[in-house]
Image (tube, rainbow, N blue to C red):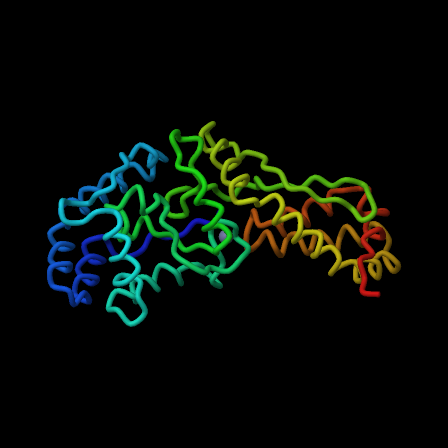
Length: 286
Ligand SMILES: [Zn+2]
């Protein structure tokens, strides 16, 4: 759920560099011969992507009469992404793009691979097209495999095209329990249309972000429990709230919608947590 700049090179460059590293002459030539088809497909993708309409691109199991989806898969894996190939630097450029190597789809785990936003088996023409290649952690990569969207609402978010803005939209609900129970929810920003609201919810569900963030939040609270109790003893609920506010502002300054930003905002705003809940975390080592 983090926006990324699209790769700074296009399909033509990817294909030409990839072909230069293929020693099987006929295969390299077949790939170069496919350029017009691949370029047309890339142009369609660039037009539909910003409008959130990529699901409309027609599926196909061939690129040209010479290259089917299987061969294109081989070209991607054995040539384009192969370590030591001339195109590997392009692959790495995509994989290494996110700040701190954090997956843009979950904003939590580290990038492990490059994901085809439109799957390579159904869209071989887009197999080496940079704007269809998104860095991802292996969990997000696996979670996304499941479905092929048939309508706009069922598309996961695309880091190169979808911008959720800087209004606060990720929020927590706090249940007064011992330990406190934190769950995450989406509060749509004013600028979002109905399709984007549906897509953010779909993305959240497919990637399992509710469970992921809840687990991280529980662990974070266990981490801060000792210092919060310390603050509570010396300055009471007002001091606890002030402390949480500082933590919130520090996270918000970097990312308005990280799970940490949402967590600290929710804790700060909870009267129950600031008066007694902070003493109920108590998940210490024995
Ligand atoms: Zn991820």
